[in-house]
Length: 129
Image (tube, rainbow, N blue to C red; front, side):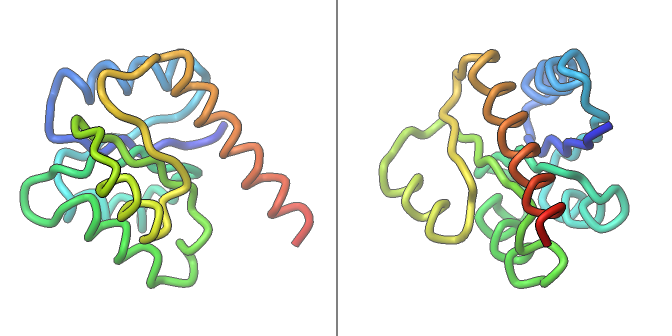
C-alpha cells in the first residue's frame, strides 16, 4: 500500500485530506508543522508528500528545500498545497523541486488523480532503475 504524508496546519484540511487519501487506498500519516514533517519523512518513508506552504516554524518551502538536498528524498513526489494562488509562489515551489501545485479549495477528485499518477510514475521509475 502506498504511503502519503499530509502536512498542513489547518486541522479541518488535515482531517479531510487524511480521509480522502485513506478512501483512495493509501496509508496516511499527518503533521501540522515543518519540523514534524521532516521527522516523519525519515521514519514513515512516504511515497508522496502533500505539503502546505504556510506552516508554523519552518515553512513548506523550507521543508521542500531540505528534502531536495538529501539524496534519498530527491525523487520523493511532493505536491504543494496553498491558499494563495499567486503565480510567484507556484513558480518558487516548482523551482525548488515540487512536482505539482494545488490551490485551496481544490477538487478532491483532481487531487486523488494527481497523487495516484505521481505515485505510479515514481513506482515505474524505480522499476526502471
